[in-house]
Amino acid sequence: MKAADMPEGPTVRRFYSIVSPFVSQYVVKVGGSTKQISLHDLKGKSFNSCQVHGKNLYLEFTISDTKAVGNASSGIDNAKEYTETREIQSSVIQATSKEQSGSSQDVGSAESHMSRWLRFHFGLYGSVRSNEFARAKQANKRGDWRDPTPRLILNFEAGGFLVFYNCRMAWCSSPASEPSCDVLSPEFDTERAVRALSSSRPVCFSLMDQKCFSGVGNIIKNEILFLAQIHPLSLGSALPIEKLHSLVHHALHFTSAWLSSKMKNEGLHYHIYMKEYCDKGHKVIKEKLGPDYGLKRLTWFCPNCQPQVKCYQTLPVSIL
Image (cartoon, rainbow, N blue to C red; front, side, top):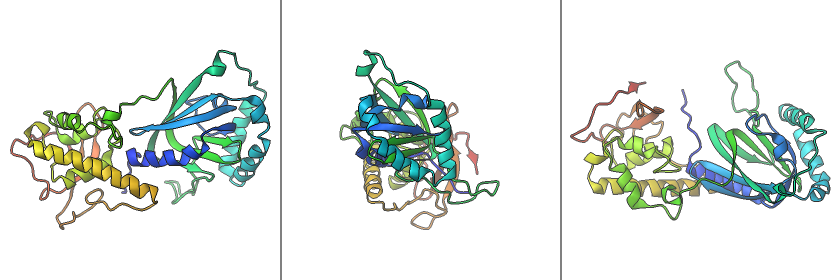
């Protein structure tokens, strides 16, 4: 069974590069299957800016000039022509368009100066596509070759469109950010990260804490623990300070290298993630690890390359 993980910091930064070319354009048509927001709230808005913080993507929208939207009818026709070639996607657009028909775009003078941010958090296989729809790569459990259903489709005045898959959306007044905790931010605080790791809990738990290591996910966690030669259940308080600094160094280097590969559309070599044997040929162990109060995630580690420290504590885990 193939494991799947949610998009991590480098992947969401790649999503940013996909959506950013649409900044300063008007949204002329909206579709999608989401029930988390009202699709009508996006129609006629201006897409002003976008930001990434950790694993979250933020898009800013403001009230646009309805005259400018009216002059962009060609953009609607171009996107519609494309989407109608795809039965599933076009049916979604048609359904949502019916819900929006007859609705006025009147807004109060106070609202006309407001901007709102739409936060995206991506689930398993979550993605963003520009001017294309995702195609099924394999049959589902029922044997159907059904294409993924878009959660949100944004058609813009110039004729292009964005498609969002498997994501949660919510409106917010401003992006929630703390650059000192974001592993891909120039403002990342390495000393603060080392202090967070030095607590008396397993380092694999600390690495997944988004308040300390925003953007780090399960893949990054597995890889950097192997690169630093640290057992995932080693207590941070029992590790030498040099080891903790090494782990933070690998976190920054690995995420930067992964982002660089993403931007070049290149693959990235995994040392331990989803491997049966490590780079040195040792048998890899796969376990579900996580705190009692939180999610337990699949963890791959090599008992030879990542030995347990002397004061290692036995914690309840389920071995697959």
